[in-house]
Amino acid sequence: MSEEKVRIQDDLYEAVNGEWLKTAVIPDDKATTGGFSTLAENVEKIMMEDFKAFAEGKKETDIKEMHYAISLYKKILDTERRDREGIAPVLPVLEKIKALETVEDLNKVAKDFLLEGLELPISMGVTEDMEDATKHVFIAYGPDIILPDTTYYAEDNESGKKLLEAYADMAAKILKYAPLTEEEQKKFLDDTLAYDALIAAKVKSQLEWSEYYKNNNPMDVEEVAKHVAPFDIKKVLSDLYGDKAPTIVVVYDPKAIKEMNGYFSEENFKLYTHWLYVRTLLNATTCLSVELKSLGTTYSRTLRGVASDPVLEKEAYQVASAMYKEPVGVYYGRTYFGEDAKKDVVDMVHKIIDTYKIRMKKNTFLAEQTKEKAIKKLSTMEVKMGYPDEIKEIWSKLVFDEEDSYFDAVCKISKIRMQDQLEELYKPVDRTRWLMPGHMVNACYNPNCNDITFPAAILQKPFYSLTQSLSENLGGIGAVIGHEISHAFDNNGAKFDENGNLNNWWLEEDFKAFEDLTKDMIKQFDGLEFHGGKVSGELTVSENIADNGGVGVTLEIMSTLDNADYQSYFKNWARIWCMKAKEEYIQLLLANDVHSPTAIRANIPPRNFKEWYEAFNVTEKDKMYIAPENRISIW
Image 1 (cartoon, rainbow, N blue to C red):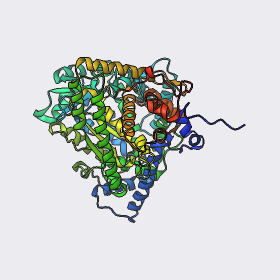
Image 2 (image 1 turned 135 degrees about the vertical axis):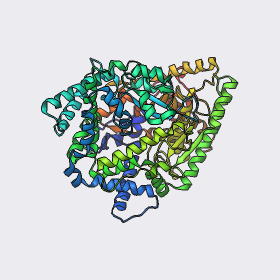
Image 3 (image 1 turned 90 degrees about the vertical axis):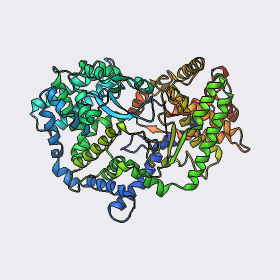
């Protein structure tokens, strides 16, 4: 008996993607395939061929920063040298850490540690000021934890226990290479896990981080200094900025800072130094011998269900293209991105923004003055399409010496990047900076600049093609564009004005109505079952609002077309979310990702719009049906 075909009225995602999902094979070095992943793999394949040709002198480029990327690429490929050096490149750094006897010793070198990327008791940096998007602020928050989220540390979380076991097993094997006695190896590892547990009780959860507007907590530096003592943040700031040291620090994670004595003090200083030693060694393995590198990815692979590391040539490309992402993205854009496609998609963006304004004018829960401010925000939204026109100066500074080891080269690059970031404090914000490089298959909205970015690499089938129908393109890249625009009005973006400032521009009753609709959106997704787990409507609400808005605004455009093909629209919407993933990775995303699972992203948003029901004659007898009174359309 032949297997019954899934009806589109019962499961859009499965009906469109089911046959492909049955036979698709996830590469051994990847956690997923399909949709975004397949496009990224295709870009990677093209760029790996180019990097190989550059390295062999068979191809040239006039982008000077690409030469640095190629030089690093060749260093990574030199496994003979990497294996010969073994653990040696990181030993001087480990000795500096082991030499720390007191907190005072740490305070003396804290500035250097910060610049060198060594983890201090608190994380620090410089970023845009949420209250004044033209300026920068100095920020502080808690250190990183081992597990993906604080929830994994719960006593009844079996997944967390297994992951900690995998981490401990990996660390124990790597510590055997360190110049430590067996007794020291065990002590350092035990202390690392103990210190991590202390941190995990203090830092924010992924759910708390998802409400990013709540990161804005300016505190007087004197108050911060009292909380983080005996660590001397005032000395760090003085060492960095002299008499221009900031008097205000924006605390992104107040609990971690205010309760820092719960994980850092004179009494448990050795816990910290042992934690730092182990963390530094494990992080360094990426740039050491092939054997150490492979050992060092064990935990990450366990977390994502990935069987093996990428082949050496792919590893070299991935690292070099990440370290020099803007020049590599510009090279990709200039080489592979067509101007006809760019013009077509830019026109589509402006059409979607104009349509969004029309929908705002027709909105039924906003007062006129709030609508006007929302429309002003849409009118001032900047569009970054393809890749930057020029490469920023910082990328030409990321140089290293030919004789440097792979590890030393990466350390030099990272230090220059950190120095540059810290020097931004008293400089105006550069609103022309891109958050994503041209070779990345993704898109984003930046609330601090009120801009949307669409890298060249995402503008491919099934998202977009000049050979696809407009209906298909609207269901693909059009809905993604609408999604990113909608982030300007999700539960986070709505807090920022047209200039990117954290600023309440709403009438109180209007925001209350929006919050009620947000609660409805949370309820629509919360508890949906997926692979033995459940979706968190609260964690995923901002992305679900954006998906809802992206579908809504593009369906509005569809209604104006003479040859609108709604079936093609919805099928391509489902196609772009097609993804096959390792089970471990599915569980990781389900617990920690602010995006709903792709199958649910494909299936839920269409059900909120009448066009779905009309396109496929969906009735209350079908599984893809939601009663009219339960349908949600916020924007």
